[in-house]
Image 1: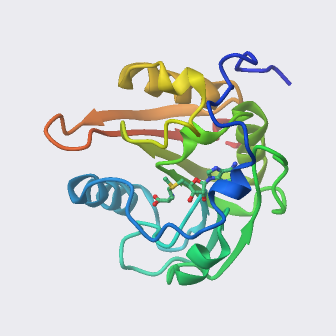
Image 2 (image 1 turned 90 degrees about the vertical axis):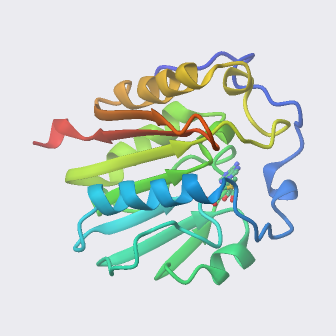
Length: 205
Ligand SMILES: C[S@@+](CC[C@H](N)C(=O)[O-])C[C@H]1O[C@@H](n2cnc3c(N)ncnc32)[C@H](O)[C@@H]1O
């Protein structure tokens, strides 16, 4: 598999295990209310009620619109956070910087949401290959982010990039695995900037 990042680009200031950092639950929101409302509106626009949703790198909130989905599977690093998340039908914990293979079968989800977290992935190529594997035909991937982060845990390539550079990086992660990017959004200059990349697995059409 092509390594999208060099060792230098994937390096973090804090080299201790991510499990340690997420050992204590962080029951906070990681962006302002304007950002969160915009994200929920995007999910409302892009997701269908019948979707099997995978909320990757989740926490105690999933930002999903209030309507029901067929199922919502959560993943994160802290069990207490995931237990508190009322939108999840099931969940699992897994450190994606240690193991990238997801415990989900091929083509079994319709939507993968990854909010405010992609900057922590040190092996995005392997993780995006897994996302491509589990997404079903007609599925969608929505990666959203702002300029906030835990800087000691974000990869160097992210820390040193502008918001436009970060959008391009996520686009690169998607396109390296055959996704077609349908939307790149960058807005809200007054609050926490809202950025999102929406991509679709066109190889299954
Ligand atoms: C800033 S929080 C965002 C949580 C949630 N998506 C939200 O929108 O509030 C970052 C999340 O990334 C996930 N994360 C960070 N490092 C990780 C790693 N090495 N493996 C798996 N997940 C990780 C954790 O689930 C953590 O809650």
